Length: 315
Image (tube, rainbow, N blue to C red; front, side, top):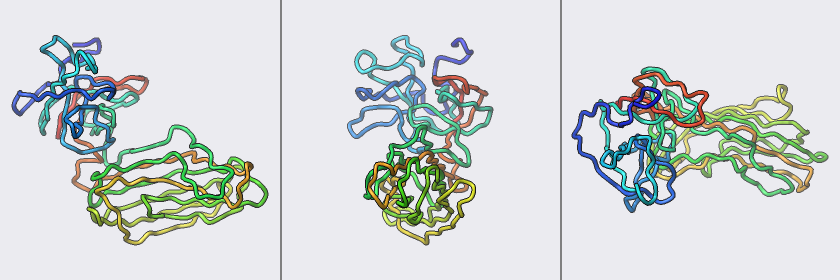
């Protein structure tokens, strides 16, 4: 047991065979501890599982017990670079790692955090939220994408899944009667266009869009609706929009982005994307948005800056 009373071994109760497989750590792939979830590249090298909310076949690194090491002892690129791992099945109980800042109780549903650790899942899961403003779009008339975006992984969408996209852009500086227009896109599909408007300093474009996946595949389809406003916060008129059934290739990655277009290239025209939040809801019966395990013992890491151990059961 460690100082917090958690075990230093990954396998708590494993219902399938006890044998494990082994693979080599991908060089410079970041920290891997026993209890981290893994992915394997085309050459068979292992690295921390990188898709937040992903639902690929599970692979979990074990502690290197043959070398007398515990699950908190990290694998490296040289001395300890062969990683034993198992592929857990429903009913298995494991000790894994919960992402820093999480606070979970018994029976909370967890999903991949995208770095080998786990985070809270559920009916809806947050996929992305920018932690800082985008770079400014300024002194250009070209339609320019903000540099805060989110990419939906290929193959991660299912029929009935929903994607909610919210946030706002702000005009931080404006010149004369020059106008600003904002577009929200998924891939090449434009969900809405806020019309060219003579904005003043501090005016915002606020938006809230909901997408539903109707069919999947290379010629999958989605529908969307929502609302946006452009102008003075609190008084700008909200306008609704709707997108009829349109094609989305769910076998490929899909970029969620916003673009800005100024009518005049002037250094006094500047806008930033201050907030972009992307949430995913999974179709009924899918086990939560990316969730695949439940918490067996409460753990509060809300004030911690590093991951901590958590006991889970795969479902």
